[in-house]
Image 1 (tube, rainbow, N blue to C red):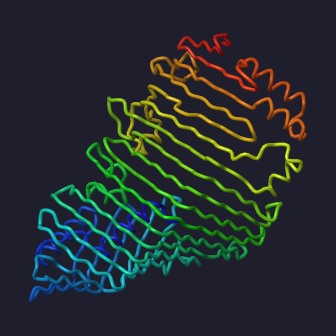
Image 2 (cartoon, helix red, strand yellow; image 1 turned 30 degrees about the vertical axis):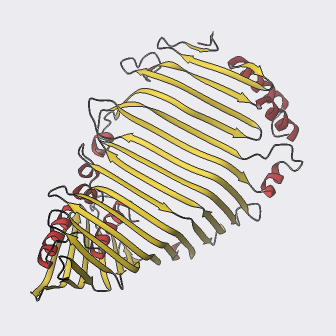
Length: 505
């Protein structure tokens, strides 16, 4: 199947063609800047015929080509007109529809599949006006609709029964770019709606079918960075991410829905419906460090199917968040890293609860899982150098770990924790190949014994196992209140481990 990098490259070309990237005060300069910017994105842009007269530059059979190892993307726009409006701006109009073809031809000695994909891109009514000057052109565009439709996909010579359609409505945006070489750029795009529809069948799998329908509203995106760096993101990561790369990107939406349906002759039907109240995604690349933060709020999920022993399973969540800060380029200096996972306010339907707890023994309070880590690490091998990593090169060394927040709340029990550790990477013998740690973590558990009692009452946990769990809690923790226990686990570089000052190892 098509990898993310292929789709990213396709999207980059489609956006460049649908919304010309550069322009200047004359139509001819617009065209030259457009070509040079396309080259910065790894593309070749040519016109079969050019006619410049009366302040109007007409381009026919405009071809764009992008080649990467084992991949090639071709697009053709029948007509583009660049009209000088007489006030120092240039208006760009283009054919309402054009076709792109993406070819993936892996090496013959690999397990990869040869794929040909044909995409029709429609931009009826799109209008772009370019202002500014040669050093810092600005363009503003509007479009009532942009549609991308995959009309053909052939894998290893055989057609695939799959339809893909992506649509945006009521677009408005601005793009500014300046400089030469790795050009600085900023952009902002808003859209009223985004829809993605994918469906298909597999005759070789007994006629199984699948469909995916996604719709979001109030889309807002912004980005800034260097044009060459952003273009390379669709190809070689090692070329895209250098110590000089600077990229920020943001996506917001005002709510959406996703529906998945699968039919299979052997396993039966499966359906998933999900909605979300809002969401956001932030991505940064700076100083060889990638930052990724995604948050979804107000999630509701319903799952049903022949393999599920209940009519349907429903769940809701106040917030689902994932964050990652990861240094990926080698260097002598230590860099910050971090990880965040937050699943808060998780609830499931009473019907599902009644299957395991018909007498309502367990509290049905919303559950929460929170893990927030931070620290410093040194990268010894570029994480973009897959060949070196596959050959066994050490990716890096962790120098410190800060457990900023740890929480697990479920059925009346609540476990929290915080801690700090440093690591001696010169000593990998004391802890069996792991750098010797030095630090401690403080833990607090409330409602633990009450939960054990209720699990025994339900018959889920045998009495002897509950007794064993209480003995373990007594070994590692001390009572500090009504069904409250606290523990401080300390690890020393000499290999010793203690709980509340009592040595365990």
